[in-house]
Image (cartoon, rainbow, N blue to C red):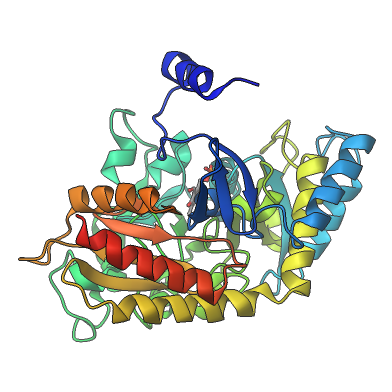
Length: 424
Ligand SMILES: Cc1ncc(COP(=O)(O)O)c(C=O)c1O
């Protein structure tokens, strides 16, 4: 093993992309990550939303056991090369949680790759090609996925995106780009689709890709009725709905899928992050009708559906179900949100989210405008005090802790946040 200095040197010399936390994390325990010198950090990121069961605890035991057993049996077997029990078992368990009728799955390595597959399958099924997405929406960074990502910073320098993608304004009521106010706006941002269809398209629509809560835009929760209105327009115009549950799925918002709480039934769900129980695994699920149009050559992924990742994902799902982690995430999330709202500090703008997906907007004291420099100073200050958070959107601290977070951890974080805000 490298020592700390050697790790940093190899990163400097060979690895692209700077680290968010300038610390080597060597292990985890409960909801804490542990640094090289033994310092403990309360993890409010769960590694970009992956480690929903936390680390080395009674919840992860079964997952670790499953991984070890599968490693001893067979490490690699593409799920469409031969029959594979871990892929079959995970698929069968997963469809217990998907909306009725969505029961045909394809496993990939990542969510971005799942988005690529879904684009192809939905285009084929609709015999159209035009795609729709939201300003502020995030769907990954491979070329198709980034073309559906409405965040310029994520597209910068990558050249022309996929042709045929159209955008709608973000359903972000607090800072509405249409300068409207909810509910007087009557959901003008959803109705905008009509104008796009009338003026920008060539009449060959395929699918609309959307996150139920926009995570990378800074945890934007669309207003009540938004998805229902959108679904009306999609239905009238024969546009399929692909809901990206990469961040919001697996109980993060208190329901297994966040789209269960926001209306329309999707034609496709994108899966990722916790799907592989900490190992790389993504996927998409569609209906039998769409799945029937999937041909052998339409999509593949050599490492997709890896048996060890599928086994880890299956054990994770079983724990989520057995331990009632959906309810727990809903309850602890509600508690944390209430405490954050009580903070009443001029540095805090909106506090928004659902379950254990929470955004705390950091603003300047005078104007109440997003203050990204202050948000990054706050992240560093929190880290010094033993809390790990990440920044998204204009200046929002995004909290995605393990679903096993307890109320005393939430209290501890709120105390740390209050003290850290005084320092920025
Ligand atoms: C909503 C959403 N979709 C897609 C992705 C891409 O996932 P991956 O990094 O596994 O490709 C992410 C990752 O952050 C995401 O949050």
